[in-house]
Image 1 (tube, rainbow, N blue to C red):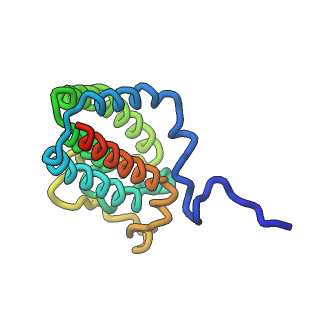
Image 2 (cartoon, rainbow, N blue to C red):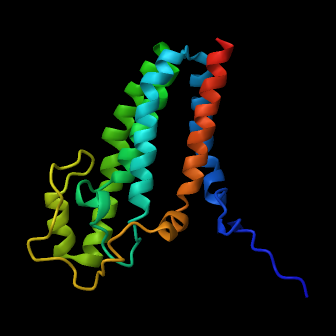
Image 3 (cartoon, one colour):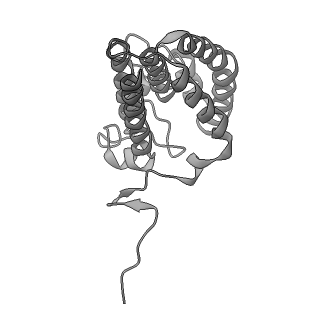
Length: 207
Protein backbone atom coordinates (compact mmCIF):
# COMPACT_ATOMS: atom_id res chain seq x y z
CA UNK A 1 0.00 0.00 0.00
CA UNK A 2 1.46 3.36 -1.02
CA UNK A 3 2.19 5.79 1.83
CA UNK A 4 -0.21 8.67 2.20
CA UNK A 5 0.93 12.16 1.27
CA UNK A 6 0.18 15.06 3.57
CA UNK A 7 -0.89 18.13 1.64
CA UNK A 8 -0.22 20.41 4.62
CA UNK A 9 3.52 19.74 4.62
CA UNK A 10 6.27 20.71 2.22
CA UNK A 11 9.51 18.73 2.42
CA UNK A 12 8.88 17.96 6.08
CA UNK A 13 8.06 21.60 6.81
CA UNK A 14 4.54 22.97 7.11
CA UNK A 15 3.24 24.11 3.72
CA UNK A 16 3.77 27.91 3.61
CA UNK A 17 0.76 28.41 1.34
CA UNK A 18 -2.17 28.34 3.75
CA UNK A 19 -5.84 28.73 2.91
CA UNK A 20 -6.23 31.49 5.51
CA UNK A 21 -3.68 33.56 3.58
CA UNK A 22 -5.91 33.38 0.50
CA UNK A 23 -8.89 34.93 2.29
CA UNK A 24 -10.81 37.44 0.10
CA UNK A 25 -10.41 40.09 2.81
CA UNK A 26 -6.78 40.45 1.71
CA UNK A 27 -7.78 41.44 -1.85
CA UNK A 28 -8.07 45.22 -1.16
CA UNK A 29 -4.60 45.25 0.39
CA UNK A 30 -3.17 43.32 -2.54
CA UNK A 31 -4.77 45.74 -5.01
CA UNK A 32 -3.40 48.74 -3.09
CA UNK A 33 0.07 47.18 -3.03
CA UNK A 34 -0.09 46.59 -6.79
CA UNK A 35 -1.10 50.22 -7.41
CA UNK A 36 1.74 51.48 -5.21
CA UNK A 37 4.15 49.30 -7.16
CA UNK A 38 2.91 50.73 -10.47
CA UNK A 39 2.92 54.37 -9.31
CA UNK A 40 6.22 54.16 -7.44
CA UNK A 41 9.57 55.53 -8.57
CA UNK A 42 12.13 53.15 -7.03
CA UNK A 43 15.85 53.34 -7.58
CA UNK A 44 18.78 51.29 -6.40
CA UNK A 45 19.45 54.06 -3.88
CA UNK A 46 15.93 53.81 -2.42
CA UNK A 47 16.28 50.03 -2.31
CA UNK A 48 19.53 50.40 -0.38
CA UNK A 49 17.83 52.71 2.13
CA UNK A 50 14.77 50.54 2.63
CA UNK A 51 16.33 47.08 2.57
CA UNK A 52 17.82 47.25 6.12
CA UNK A 53 14.35 47.96 7.54
CA UNK A 54 12.86 45.01 5.64
CA UNK A 55 15.60 42.66 6.79
CA UNK A 56 15.35 43.92 10.37
CA UNK A 57 11.60 43.40 10.35
CA UNK A 58 11.92 39.88 8.97
CA UNK A 59 14.57 39.14 11.59
CA UNK A 60 12.36 40.38 14.43
CA UNK A 61 9.50 38.19 13.22
CA UNK A 62 11.70 35.10 12.92
CA UNK A 63 13.07 35.77 16.41
CA UNK A 64 9.56 36.16 17.82
CA UNK A 65 7.86 33.11 16.30
CA UNK A 66 10.62 30.84 17.61
CA UNK A 67 9.49 31.74 21.13
CA UNK A 68 5.75 32.12 20.59
CA UNK A 69 3.53 29.47 22.17
CA UNK A 70 -0.12 30.30 21.60
CA UNK A 71 -2.53 29.77 24.52
CA UNK A 72 -0.52 26.95 26.17
CA UNK A 73 1.49 29.44 28.23
CA UNK A 74 2.18 33.15 28.47
CA UNK A 75 5.15 33.96 26.24
CA UNK A 76 7.43 36.52 27.91
CA UNK A 77 10.84 35.35 26.67
CA UNK A 78 12.92 36.31 23.63
CA UNK A 79 11.68 39.58 22.09
CA UNK A 80 8.52 39.32 24.21
CA UNK A 81 10.67 40.31 27.20
CA UNK A 82 11.13 43.72 25.54
CA UNK A 83 7.92 44.38 23.61
CA UNK A 84 4.44 42.85 23.75
CA UNK A 85 3.86 42.73 20.00
CA UNK A 86 7.16 41.91 18.26
CA UNK A 87 5.33 40.42 15.29
CA UNK A 88 3.50 43.69 14.67
CA UNK A 89 6.78 45.57 15.11
CA UNK A 90 8.47 43.33 12.56
CA UNK A 91 5.61 43.70 10.10
CA UNK A 92 5.70 47.49 10.43
CA UNK A 93 9.44 47.54 9.78
CA UNK A 94 8.91 45.43 6.67
CA UNK A 95 6.08 47.69 5.51
CA UNK A 96 7.93 50.95 6.01
CA UNK A 97 11.09 49.48 4.50
CA UNK A 98 9.13 48.43 1.42
CA UNK A 99 7.65 51.91 1.08
CA UNK A 100 11.11 53.48 1.36
CA UNK A 101 12.33 51.15 -1.39
CA UNK A 102 9.42 52.11 -3.64
CA UNK A 103 10.08 55.84 -3.27
CA UNK A 104 8.01 58.61 -4.80
CA UNK A 105 4.98 60.54 -3.55
CA UNK A 106 2.70 57.49 -3.68
CA UNK A 107 4.94 55.62 -1.25
CA UNK A 108 5.03 58.64 1.06
CA UNK A 109 1.25 58.79 1.07
CA UNK A 110 1.16 55.06 1.74
CA UNK A 111 3.40 55.50 4.78
CA UNK A 112 1.10 58.18 6.20
CA UNK A 113 -2.02 56.09 5.64
CA UNK A 114 -0.36 53.00 7.12
CA UNK A 115 0.65 54.93 10.24
CA UNK A 116 -2.84 56.35 10.76
CA UNK A 117 -4.64 53.06 10.16
CA UNK A 118 -2.31 50.97 12.28
CA UNK A 119 -1.88 53.41 15.15
CA UNK A 120 -5.49 54.51 15.53
CA UNK A 121 -7.58 51.60 14.22
CA UNK A 122 -5.79 48.25 14.06
CA UNK A 123 -3.40 48.16 17.03
CA UNK A 124 -5.76 49.54 19.73
CA UNK A 125 -8.46 47.03 18.80
CA UNK A 126 -6.13 44.04 18.56
CA UNK A 127 -4.25 44.99 21.73
CA UNK A 128 -7.44 45.22 23.77
CA UNK A 129 -8.82 41.96 22.36
CA UNK A 130 -5.60 40.15 23.21
CA UNK A 131 -5.45 41.74 26.66
CA UNK A 132 -8.98 40.57 27.48
CA UNK A 133 -8.16 37.03 26.38
CA UNK A 134 -4.82 36.78 28.19
CA UNK A 135 -6.07 38.33 31.42
CA UNK A 136 -8.82 35.71 31.42
CA UNK A 137 -6.17 33.01 31.01
CA UNK A 138 -3.31 34.30 33.17
CA UNK A 139 -4.80 36.93 35.44
CA UNK A 140 -2.41 39.05 37.50
CA UNK A 141 0.70 37.71 35.76
CA UNK A 142 -0.38 39.10 32.39
CA UNK A 143 -1.64 42.32 34.00
CA UNK A 144 1.84 42.85 35.47
CA UNK A 145 3.48 42.04 32.14
CA UNK A 146 1.17 44.38 30.21
CA UNK A 147 1.82 47.24 32.62
CA UNK A 148 5.62 46.88 32.44
CA UNK A 149 6.22 45.99 28.77
CA UNK A 150 5.37 48.47 25.95
CA UNK A 151 3.10 47.36 23.13
CA UNK A 152 5.30 48.39 20.21
CA UNK A 153 8.39 50.35 21.25
CA UNK A 154 10.83 48.02 23.07
CA UNK A 155 11.91 48.70 26.64
CA UNK A 156 15.62 49.09 27.34
CA UNK A 157 16.03 46.07 29.61
CA UNK A 158 14.69 42.54 29.64
CA UNK A 159 11.46 42.18 31.61
CA UNK A 160 11.29 39.83 34.57
CA UNK A 161 8.30 39.35 36.81
CA UNK A 162 8.73 40.75 40.32
CA UNK A 163 7.03 37.57 41.50
CA UNK A 164 9.64 35.40 39.80
CA UNK A 165 9.49 33.34 36.65
CA UNK A 166 7.20 30.45 35.96
CA UNK A 167 8.86 27.35 37.50
CA UNK A 168 7.15 25.16 34.90
CA UNK A 169 9.19 26.74 32.12
CA UNK A 170 12.35 24.77 31.44
CA UNK A 171 15.44 26.18 29.77
CA UNK A 172 14.35 24.45 26.56
CA UNK A 173 10.92 26.08 26.68
CA UNK A 174 12.57 29.48 27.04
CA UNK A 175 14.85 29.02 24.01
CA UNK A 176 14.19 29.65 20.31
CA UNK A 177 12.82 26.51 18.63
CA UNK A 178 12.44 25.74 14.94
CA UNK A 179 9.26 23.73 15.49
CA UNK A 180 7.59 26.92 16.70
CA UNK A 181 8.85 28.76 13.62
CA UNK A 182 7.25 26.00 11.54
CA UNK A 183 4.01 25.79 13.55
CA UNK A 184 3.51 29.54 13.35
CA UNK A 185 3.99 29.37 9.55
CA UNK A 186 6.67 32.05 9.36
CA UNK A 187 8.13 30.47 6.23
CA UNK A 188 5.15 31.84 4.32
CA UNK A 189 5.95 35.35 5.54
CA UNK A 190 9.60 35.02 4.52
CA UNK A 191 8.61 33.84 1.06
CA UNK A 192 6.30 36.84 0.74
CA UNK A 193 9.19 39.15 1.70
CA UNK A 194 11.43 37.52 -0.91
CA UNK A 195 8.70 37.96 -3.53
CA UNK A 196 8.32 41.60 -2.52
CA UNK A 197 12.04 42.25 -2.90
CA UNK A 198 12.00 40.56 -6.30
CA UNK A 199 9.09 42.70 -7.52
CA UNK A 200 10.75 45.91 -6.34
CA UNK A 201 13.99 45.00 -8.12
CA UNK A 202 12.08 44.25 -11.32
CA UNK A 203 10.30 47.60 -10.97
CA UNK A 204 13.67 49.37 -10.66
CA UNK A 205 14.82 47.77 -13.89
CA UNK A 206 11.66 48.97 -15.63
CA UNK A 207 11.98 52.61 -14.53
